[in-house]
Image 1 (cartoon, rainbow, N blue to C red):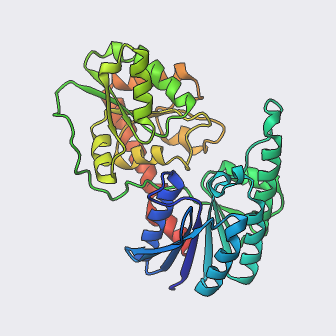
Image 2 (cartoon, rainbow, N blue to C red):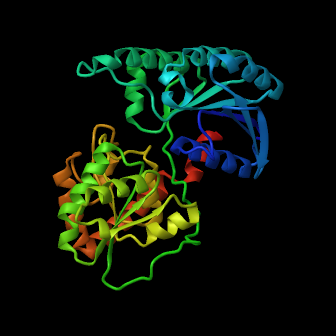
Length: 374
């Protein structure tokens, strides 16, 4: 059945961000399923409207802040959608992740405009006795999550762990449903990349991500300890933040700076081509690999061996389905795993096969769309 969806998102291309990229992909794929889709995002300047690939994109000044919520509500009432689909991560909507006016408005919109469906990419900022300066942030994000969950007609979570978090936050009208995040590169043919000439025996150790503090420390340890073991190895840094990290290392004069390959931020087809040239992707996650990690999905979908780790947010199937995975977010464990995989082509091939099978069974876009369109 054809429905009119309005996707509410705090970020949308050309703005940088994984949720924005995901929202754009989701909108385009819903249109391919014969759905009508309007994306509503915020603008810092004037109101604008664009259309492309069947998706209508409305940008409203300060759309989700107190000054713009009235205009956003009027536009929503004019659109008369069948469903409101909120891409929720608290930090995406301003007010330093404490946007109580939006949380309150969502309840009203869900009652009087259209059923509110929510995809929780993140839920709350956690309480911690070790970070008392963030107690107000934790309290408000918990309050917002409770308000939004109680207003929603359907609730989706991108990681199993968020189900437990939502249950602790407060009662919900409906049970949450698991909706893992597919790869943004699914179906993208590798092309358009200016790759260096392929050299037999050369080893490319890659990383794709946003380069958080722990990931940077693991990559630095890999440069210091792994690269010397492989004289023909290079470290390939892909994604946002890669050039900044490479520049920091070069300024510090690290011994492996001449073995870095940093192509910068790439369009999807070129990124897919660069990933295909990597022998191994080293992907450390401080909270563990999980179904919300699009960088892990890129490796599984593209058939690239993945060296990663379990953690508190990891779903149980990772340790069962991947034959090689670090048991905890420890640098030494990841380096040991990466060393073993780089030295064993058979294990890399086995890991690739298992990863592709896992992606095909659980994470494909058509699996997600089937759940949404039920």
